[in-house]
Image (cartoon, rainbow, N blue to C red; front, side):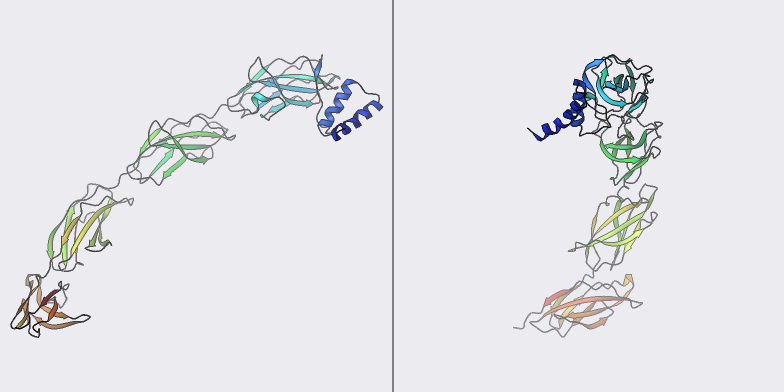
Length: 436
């Protein structure tokens, strides 16, 4: 004999000794053993229904969030041990038992959708669900009444309605703020925001907003001049989501237009003057001009200028240097334009050159007296040294120390009347022919 069969014999034997060995008592003892000996739940007999009074005054309340409260009039009868509640999804059934309530005075029960015995087709109540109910009595002996009450119905609260007055604010820098009207539904606990690049979707969830009266959301980190569509759905406190609102459209703020007409209008030794056309935008904070020197991958800022200034002089260029200039416009929100059409410029030099003669190496240059220069320092370069070999007020110099067969390297630096210096010239190299 199995251990379970042995345990079953104990209550059966006790029942026989007590003189209550009817079929009903034996069945009740078996069922008590199946429940592990718990006595807090009645044991019902499924077969052999009995005639008992039918509960009256059964009512079910609609409009509750995923719950249906039921109540009925108590049945005053010594034969009644409690009530059985049955539920269906259609008036004609099939009905399944969802609650067993001991005590004839227990006449209120709230259906919150827990899984019950045989419930099958309706384990949980959702939003906007209509359920049908009937109530039976059961006897103190556990037998269920043959007749049920009239069928009543109730409908749970509908899913939240779409939020109204949804607005998406355009022309914001790289973001779209949203606002809508708070839901009148007291069951709403928040909202879910969706976004799509197209009116027809697909719409992807962006995030949720907690709180019925929290009706603002900002979609950030967007690009410039981007088009998006948004819709919002309300969420109830049971996790249900209603239909979304109709889509609304927003466009992020565009970046400024690239400046036009960047050009060099004047050059002098060590300086390039650049100008451009003013932008049409009214919300600019200025321009930024940068340079990139030939052979370098670094871009250096020449100047950051207010919006009413469209000319600047770059005084940090070397003689004969090749530089590329780039100009962008910046608005008050920090958005930057694409660069203006870049230009490449060769800076003014010395026209410096050298020739070898019988008297040495003759150096010549443009003295640029019209730019205020009064003379020139002449330098000779060794492998690791630089030596000044003369200062002249003219436009030429003869290095008489140069020897036939030697190689020489020179630079020139012009000096202004105030003793300030120009950038050095590009070096020139020359080899003096050997004597024959």
